[in-house]
Image 1 (cartoon, rainbow, N blue to C red):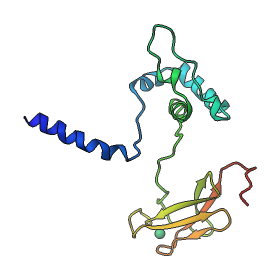
Image 2 (image 1 turned 90 degrees about the vertical axis):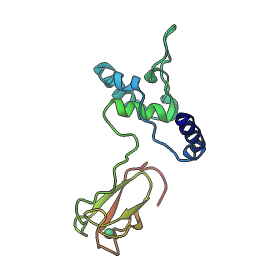
Image 3 (image 1 turned 120 degrees about the horizontal axis):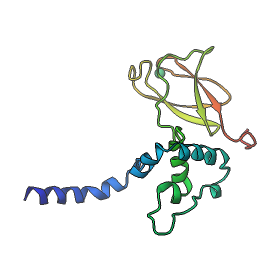
Image 4 (image 1 turned 45 degrees about the vertical axis):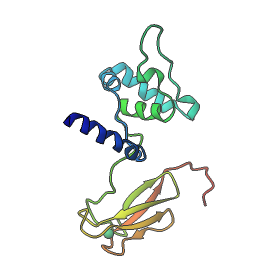
Length: 164
Ligand SMILES: [Zn+2]
């Protein structure tokens, strides 16, 4: 009886959950492959040589076997998998550096693939003041009006993009 109730409740939560973008952890196969030096090395090579989306295609599974993620994953999933296998993060999930207060001479550097990036400062240590949202751009360091910490953007995007 209890069990049925639980299942029913879980079922009605499902649509809600589906609307929230979720981070899908790598499958068991990927973790098992991670121990294989050969695959780690070839993943790093493939990642380094991938220049565009059409490069992110796997070799496909072998006949009579269930394909592994590294054999069949494509696109962004493959990019994330290759990064994971070679010990990197394709999508940085680290919070903003709140280990110290940035100064004009030594600002907190915010890296970005776009000419601007939104940041949320809550002081140092983090949580010292209410969250304040700011936009940092390439041209001028930005100072938090609450704690005075200085942030500066470092543009890591395409140098040939005409964003100026
Ligand atoms: Zn602040």
